[in-house]
Amino acid sequence: MKDLIEKFKEKKVLVIGDLMLDKHIHGTVSRISPEAPVPVLKAEKESFNPGGAANLANNLALLGAKVYLAGTVGDDEPQKILFKELEKNNINTSCILKTSKPTIQKIRGLSHQHLFRIDYEDTSNITKENEQELLSLIKNKISEIDAIILSDYSKGTLTETLVKNIISFAKENNKLITADCKPINLSFYKNVDLIKPNKKEAIEMTLTNDIEKAGKILVEKLNSNVIITKGSEGFSIFEKNKNITHIPTKVKEIYDVSGAGDTVLAILTLSLISGTNLKEATELANGAASIVISKPGVTAITLEELETSLSNNIKTIPKTWGEEQWIVNNEKYCGKKMFIKQDHYCSYHMHKVKEETFYILEGELEIIHQGKYLKLKKGSTIHIKPNEYHSFRALQDTVFFEFSTQHLEEDNYRLTKSDKGTHEQWKNEIEKCLK
Image (cartoon, rainbow, N blue to C red; front, top):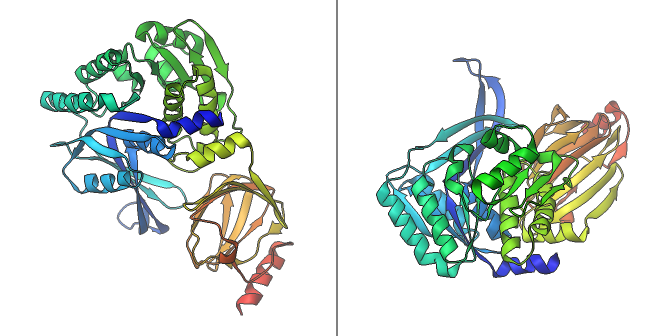
């Protein structure tokens, strides 16, 4: 498998589809609006990520591939931000058209949890002229690439005419073409090499709750290989040669499936053009998905994380209060899975550089953060900024994830020691050091 993923760095992939910008507004909620019974989010920070087909392109780039991205955007501020985000991973934007349709933007408000989403979008089909312009750009790029991926969110970019022309053109040039599409556009995708619906989509596409029947119907209808992703149930592979294979998931605890489908399709496509078969490609994608769904939000897996997952070389560090497993620690960020035993607590500390987000997977913690006392139950998140003192105590055996900007031992500034004790002992130690 290591030899296989090394080949990813040699591959060139063209992603075509609905491009989006994801904007996240992070803040705190301390009151309810006097105008309506809704929370007031005090905005503290904004972040941006490529969304839709652009997220799939981001996945491929982080896996080492050279990526070209095709689609449409508006001539507006979200487009400028999106292009800046794409430039960070050297994604080629020369096949993207600026049109009269605005750039699709999804804005999410977050304060320990997802509060709201605002969508800016025009889902009408692109014009016939835009179809021809995109097709011309794709034809000019075909000799440089190894595969095409169609990422269809039914937002108007991948029209029936465009999709059918792209599939025919890929076949004429012996290029692998894979796809992920919404059920409403299924008929456009006949003769793609591989299509990857999730379980819900497969049921909607075939009107049957039996996954084996659904897979067989899709293979027959599309003349394509089909992989159905089933979340915690794993994957089902349906090949044109009638072979059916079911692969159980590698992950037991699912945090967030957002973006996992893009990771899977990226791995499948890169693996197939690197010379492996569909079963081996799916097994590798399974391992990658197990990492992604253990991380918060729409995210991607890096080549380093994939290599680490294959080696099973996850570093485990014993602590006074339990243990931590380092999933990844590089120059960009650190990801750890933590276990803290009941009635144990960590030091009251802060970091001058590191910024952290915690997610409670199982159990319950109490926390003192900047002098405030909180309880965090299963599913809760909390964001800790640099220079903010905090300490956790476990009300029961608790598993949680920490995702941070980095991990440097010299960036730990502790006022108390980690220990085991009662709620009162824990609070008294912290209050004593603050006097």
